[in-house]
Length: 476
Image (cartoon, rainbow, N blue to C red; front, side, top):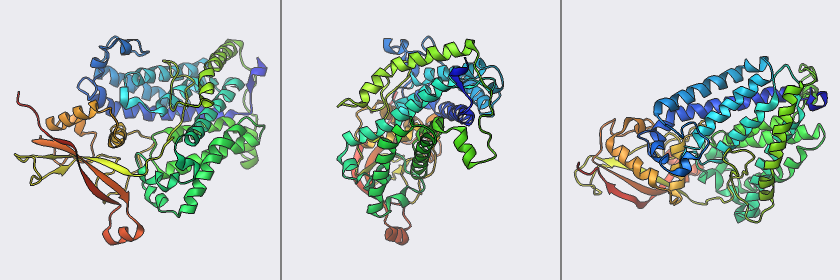
């Protein structure tokens, strides 16, 4: 089946397979370190309790019959091991079915985690990783040519990801249409990075150019991914550059990193060879065995059929953002920041060991690794690692009605639960139990250059009162 394969995308296959596998390693590492405290047997939203619902038991997960924290750790260890093997490139040296099997194992194991993850795994990049892993599974190995249908479907994935995000912005917040969105976004995004303040302080005309550049990159450039070479490669390069700017100015878990990897589906070897003469062009194996070509065609046909739903969503008046249309998280709808918040609110969690929880008490703040707290602290870079608790704290400050996990979180702080405390950067009670905890809400904004010189602060903040009144453990 020589017509089904190509020697023009050997570099793309290497980057796609190793890059997606690397993101899986990060995802499983994040799960290993956070899942037991968030969703484990004594987690904030315990999976065993979730499995009592008929809906949960119908999900495609190996945990549907039984869950334990030990089993979860074994799943993560297995995923990390298989992912690292793919990053190194060992399975790619064998027959085409070997890397296919490895990626399907990663997809299946992580699907088992995501479907049990409830609100802590309700992010669009979870579905993006699952879809990418399933598609990349069919790229074959170094013994076969790169399957053309898979390369084209990966471009369709990048198109949905970028164009969907662009359309959700135009249909959503007016600030995207009047070019003012980035007056606010760098300051109010969920988890700012080390350079977010500098980006926020850029002149407003540059912010307007940023928005125009974003619209061009998301609404025009994705169409060029399907153009002849080298236009498609140039379009991919634009996407890579814009995603790198997002990496520098924010913390969006692995969303930007995975998009960069997937964009390589449009970069051919001839273009790379023209820029880097040492890179060989068209030097890979030719042809594809029928035993691998037939499944590739069958899977492509399935994915094309499933594309009806996200394609219809792109032109719908009420476009869905980050939606899956099947339990397997294949061929999803994507999009982010359809609206931009213009004011930053932060929930600060505090505890005291005073007998009475009034303002005379010594209230000490718990600090999170990523979200703003101490106004002197420069935001850190965590992406592509995903701090799930920090992200949900951002949604909580926006008034999210999903608060069951937070009530459980406050109870764990009162118990000084070691697993929960390990999710934090600072435990002001050093492992001991506070007598009371509460949550206050604050208005945060970046300091100006003059304010920074005068005070040394990164954030200026103003108290807006209590969000959750003091509570303590009930006797017995």
